[in-house]
Image (cartoon, rainbow, N blue to C red):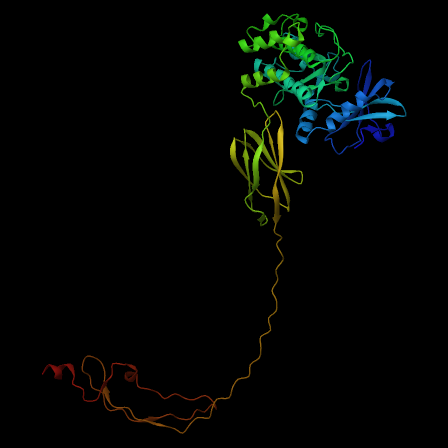
Amino acid sequence: MSIDLAPSDLGVLGAPLGAGAEAVVIEAPSLRLGDVTGELVYKEYARPRTPDPVSADIVAARLALPISLRHRLDASTAWPIRRVVEGDELRGVLLPRVPAAFVRTMTLPSGTTSTDVRDAQGLMSPEPHGPNALGLAVAPGDEDRLRICRDLAGILQLLHLDMGLAYGDLSARNVLVRFEGRPRALLLDCDAVRPLPSALPPLHTPDWNPPESGPATPAADVYKFGLFVLRVLTPRDWSSVNRDPSWAVDALSAEGLDLLRGSLHDDPAGRPCAADWFVHLSRVLGEAIEPPRFGGCGLGSTLVAPGDTTAVLWHLDRAADVTVTAGGRVLGRVHARPGPGRLDVAPSISGVLRLRAENGVGHDDRVAGAVTVMTSWPSSELPVPIPALATPALPEPCATPLVGLPPAIYGSMGTAFPSVQTFSVEPSPVPGVPTLPEVPWFLADPTALPHRTPTRRGASR
């Protein structure tokens, strides 16, 4: 996969979104890349540069990450996606567009509106200036401020440990914040990061420089992160330039104060790492320290009828939000506890069901399996021919027999009946259909007795 694009590859550019002394950011609405979701913007440098290896390494570092870490990086930073190179000049970089949640719109006294990014500088100002700068009605609480600090610590941990990079110019202006839903941080200006070890000096925003000089290092990043924690948790006058950790006595626990004092130590070797901060703040907030991992997953049934459900089964090592998708469409979502879990979904078409577990630190993607949705075939009545069968001829009637029946008496009351005359079967007037004789009604009773059988009265004598 190429890390470079030509200006002609960007398509028709849109309106400028912002400008500074070093670059202008322009919409690139028609450009889409397979490894990026969402809209893109073009950061065009005011002065073109030589395509140096460092800029190539920054782009390549993202592409070299596992998919789960790459998604985490994309959600937490405005990372350079591609370089824009023309001839022997580096004209700029392609970036993901900043999500709308990190942008504020303010109405000026004149009635016009102003749109700008929501940076962390507003967290360091007391009321009412701080909330106004953030575009909020009320100032964020202590827990929300701790969550912003934890999120930034997780981003630095990703850069230092997983990518082998130092950020460099960490300051409130380069950290965007949002408070809708889960408080999150977003790191800007990532095209100035430095691979480790680096001989290049970092940039320093005034009032954010560490006591040591030299190249960009994780220790210098941690010093600036300590200033960030101190100033975000103590929004007072002059907080944005404060370096005294004693201001945070009421905002941090004893362990947190030790980390803060260590972060602001003059000796870089005595400072903690970003991972120490991340673990501490996660424990304070009751949050997960590591991304979730599936121990296994599968389907209860791989063949379902239209409208029926199948069970998606999994085993998680820690609590997380689990989402089931098929073909990019969400079939179900649930907050799952550690251990075995299940979610019944009703796929509408055959395909592969995918699982994602996410807990804020990261996520794990797995394929649950393929499911087949049976197709209902139309039914119709088939004509069934009825065969015509020949009617067999009945035999000719035999000679008229004489039937002699003995006289009988009927019933239990001893009533005697006369002898029955003999009768014969008459030929039928309809050929082939015999005529049955008329049988006296008392002969139809099986209890009829022979003639001269004693009655009840006679038997009693």
